[in-house]
Length: 140
Image (cartoon, rainbow, N blue to C red; front, top):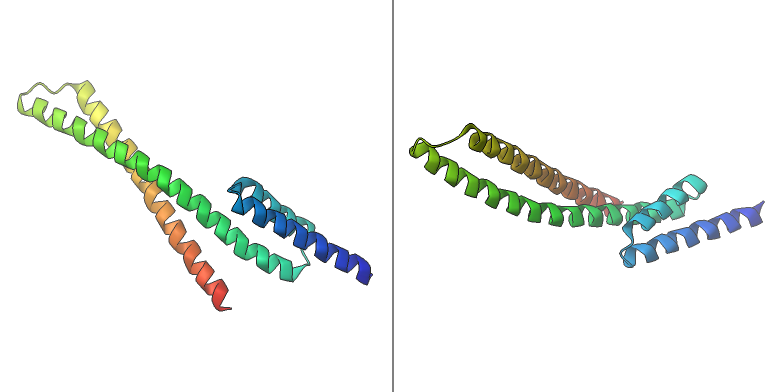
């Protein structure tokens, strides 16, 4: 009985080491999968699962930070496009030349920009939440 328990502990530790290696190599999806496998396969190996929790938080933080970087770049593009289109529409309005198509395009661009901004803010909040959880975990 004790032999099997030690074997499971070793297998769980090995899976956690693999997850850590994948994380360090930047393979975040595989690291996530390793953590999920560890949780499902070894639900009673508490010590290793604690280590997995810390690594899981690091993985989720890195994923969110990567996504935030991409979203920030896209938001900058959307802002420039919206501002450019808005300037043109305002000029056309002043000259009484604004077309319904221009106004529709401006509205669609604003909606697109706003949805990206919402995603950006959500990712920022997620990162903040993960960091708070990490601090709570460290203080325990």
